[in-house]
Length: 285
Image: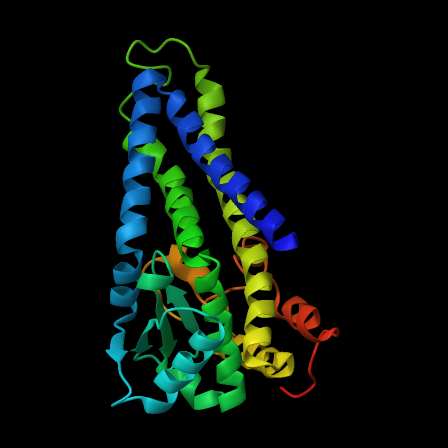
């Protein structure tokens, strides 16, 4: 029941993002609202069909098989069978920054991608926990939901620039209060970021629990999260598109301070506490 309620809340948050997007467009009159609706629809279609290709291309990831990565592919296959999922495609991204993500529009078109760096620092049990986490995302369609949320949130920030030559209120300049429109331009991206954050954080906790169940060992996932958090703070990942940060198991670049307020991931300490009942495993220094 709790998982069902989480899905309902996520659907409401996504609807809120789309409504905010259309509402911003309405400050430019009926044409602006129609343009916002069309843009939102087009971006969701692009996100649905091409999000996996975009994410993998950004990372320079290459598909692997049981011939060139037998241990990794065998692990994914075993855990996917345990989760009653189709076998996802498996990719390795050639970066030393340790991380992992899942992408794809549904379980039949899913991808699990790990970096070269994560395979160097995690033991087998820890890597199983990470793969289980990603498979849990796949099982509950989190990749699609997070991608759509990121796409709409990004578009909300772009929309005022695309409509900057149209007077607020429409071509005739009447209707909406221009000061209210300007205020909305400032506030809307912040509201969108908060909604996106709420969607992503809730899904991360759910995937942690699902991953621990699949791997059969919450302590291994907890130590993996601690290791990944520590290494990613030392080695920020230079992603061309910051909106993709929510895809990864731990946030790949987080400067701390105010930026942490809008992090798409919960604090690692809280995730570990949710997994094992205390803030730290005490195993990672």
